[in-house]
Length: 618
Ligand code: G6P
Image 1: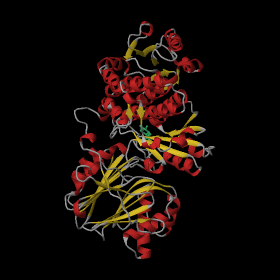
Image 2: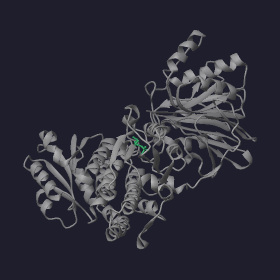
Image 3: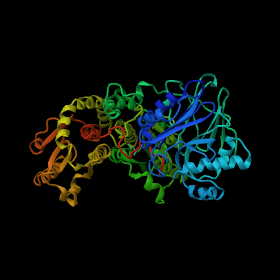
Image 4: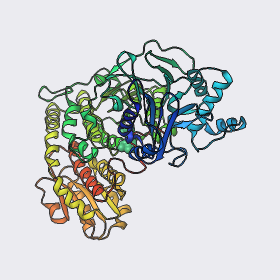
């Protein structure tokens, strides 16, 4: 996590850095800092809190002059989020300065060694250790900054994206990456360069970006060029690839919406279309997706599919378990990236591993991908962020094309992941002969109706707001669903927890009897997904059990439902659809319910406390 952004060129750097930090705040917002070089002095300011707090502090702290500088927004790992632990960090001499995203695992050993050589430390961070290690090497080896950084990183165990400046070399920035992303925006004629954890900070300045690969270090020289080297063996990277960015400024702005989360909820109809555009030709009965088409044999011969993911993406993986087993009859296991990577899993060459990740940067999912590859499995990635680490690491994959998701609580990523997974399941189901042609056609025809149905559902917003107002102050919520909608119950509970800080649990409806039923009394709101497909009657029985214990029932039902309506305190209707696609609809009211409750509680919806959008630490 953490966001890094920097500039070297001929414009004033400060406004570019501040704007960049605001765009990267989704990566962490425990503290923020900026450093500028005015030609003479290094001017540094940092603070606990958000970028807006930093802006206020900078006014009193430093001159904002300078055409070179960088900044950092932090999600705390080592050391509490306070002033001293905030980035940037200076070296002992005050000549070198660094920002860092990641964790240096052997920092303690390195720190002891440096202390024995006379270094003193002001913060609890691993980053301050690294900048002093670079300084010590620079002095001992009498080498330039780039070399010192390279030698220091050879001693480091951990993950990092770093940006380093040396007062003695004021026309140069050094960056490096291992496990955490960093990109360079290349200005015209090398007259300016932008550095950032992702491309959003420089989108209006250049469309040309270079993404550093793991294990690479770049020396960026103003008015000259960029030299990229391998950290471990010093080879020069000859074929540096510049990518043309597809991102637009409009996509990363809030527009007329109060929050990014609300904008992204409302973008779902178009995001779902963008996911299947060019891939789903419903009238012709065709699904095409090169990542799948080119590797059909691997999928068809697979003993099983293992899905690895974290957070909301893991919930999409659970929906996929139902899709693949139901439609394609392929056995599926769904794993948290963090558990999979450390439990010595049995993986064979006959396994297909699907990694799902919005950001494509989640450290545990990425590590799970690497592990699966090392055991010979075929690994397919489903990511949203183009060019992200997971997207580049997998054998093949498909992007969801949902557009940038900035709200920390994931919304459109979830529904677009399910859309893509549905396409995979349908194509495989047909190829395996488990789906009759008429059945297959019915699925395709229905999938293209989903965006319209989501659009209709979004009109329920006011109704959902009134329900939110009734329950905004309760301390607990329970979410129940069965079959395809059990993962939706988990996702609904996660959304509420994340942004409103209300404790919420998701459960398979029938499991309620084995524990959670003890929690139900007249104060407990229970959200039940009770669409008319699947286990409707069984869910109705579960609803009766809640009612007889005076629980407050909020039911998600199919349009025209009369049975549940008579029992529940509140109902929210979703349009009729095939059972397999119900998660694409039932999720929407749960997103809106959490959103309104969080807003009414005065919570920071887009930047909930302690969370970050891309978790690049394990
Ligand atoms: C973080 C985010 C979640 C997200 C999860 C997995 O926890 O706050 O919204 O679902 O990471 O992220 P990924 O980018 O891998 O989908």
